[in-house]
Image 1 (cartoon, helix red, strand yellow):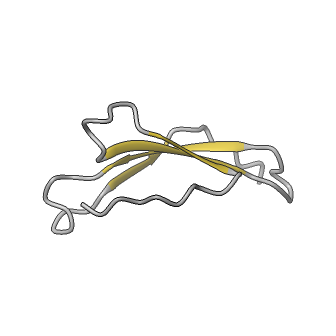
Image 2 (spheres, helix red, strand yellow):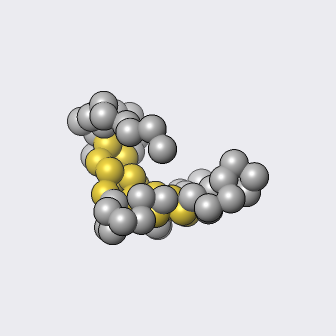
Length: 68
């Protein structure tokens, strides 16, 4: 596996709960402008062992409201 050494942008954070299982991680994205300024959204990523033959599973863990 290639090591990714670049730091994420200031509006993103990466959390890997178990360093032994790097295929399961969370990314938080903070909106820095517009109508949703200040909102934070958390996504959970699960990359299967069979990747790229099986797709990753991504879930938005933050409740998203639609006012329209």
